[in-house]
Image (tube, rainbow, N blue to C red; front, side, top):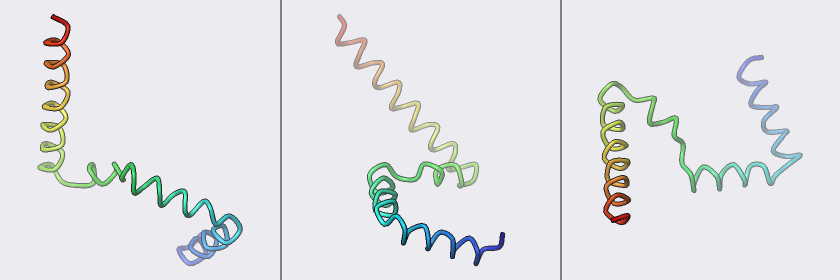
Length: 68
């Protein structure tokens, strides 16, 4: 199946079920596309990993202080 056929099929699907397009758009705008984080190079992956470690570590620190 080439790209034109796939685009035509998707367009027909959206015409049959217009709420699917709206639903997809709302979900992507609220959640975001996490795949874009992994499409970057090595530096992007390292920065993402550091940010996640800081967030998780900070959450654990706050939880440990609240339990005392």
